[in-house]
Amino acid sequence: MLKPFHSVSVNPHNGKGELFVLFAGYGQTAPCHEVGPQMLDYYLIHTVESGKGRFSCLGKEYELGPGDTFVIFPGEVVTYASDKRDPWRYRWIGFKGTSADDLLIRLGITAQRPVVHAEGLPRLPVFLRRAERALREAGPACDLQAEGELRLLLAKLASHADVPSRRGEETDAGRQQIDRAVRWLQLQYAQPVTIEQLAQHMGYHRTYLSKLFRQHTGLTPTQFLLKIRMERAKLLMTEGSTIEQIAYSVGFSDPLYFSKQFKKWFGCTPSEYRGKHGRLAYDCSR
Image (cartoon, rainbow, N blue to C red; front, top):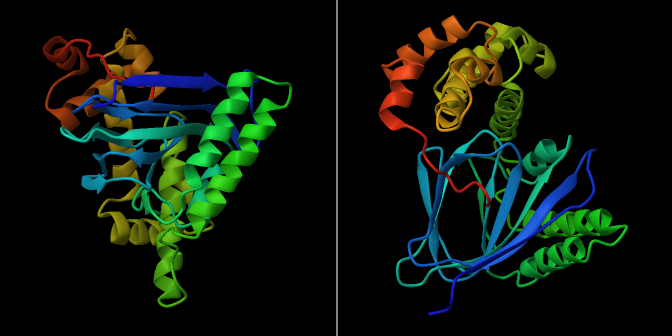
């Protein structure tokens, strides 16, 4: 069995704009190596080079192997682990950007469809390897090189992703609009946003948006936003932030109201939860 290792190269430049790479890396995992549950504030793509493992997101578990790619979206609680007998080796790339969300949705890659089976695309690891090498060499244009490789990777993934077909176009359009709304909430939950603002952003009346949202997610936008905030708050409880800081970090201006909502959601106050669970160590490096 191969010896486990982990290597990552970070972008030395402060990126901004529609798409920019944060870091890229590769590694061989140990048997049963598990990451999570964790929630990130950036996008993270893994492509499996060899071995097997599982990836869990939104209550669904995927069994993955060589050639498979899984995408982690900001604000989603995920877990992934290597196989006991054949632990996977993979490459990954983390990125952000104002157009990242719309780009992935256009390619048919969403939090509800985060896996692409592309066994017939051997060049996928090549793009990731080139991006990592560019960042490792840290040349003056390494950020542009890494971004270029990321775009090539996404273009290749698009040919195998589950892009909605023309059949049932109205249903697909509704699904895509809700995916956009979900992404907006996941990226804006830390701000004092309202569902009225979301409806205005989407170009819908609030009542219609709530109906459409419930049809596709089973929750109203208000319930979904609260779910995101509570799950994020639970993760922050394992860190050194105060209850007040956590409340502000997940979009509440009133810590007392936050505590009441937390108790309704989890059945205990933030202080009680922290007393029971303490600070847990999550591997958020990948």
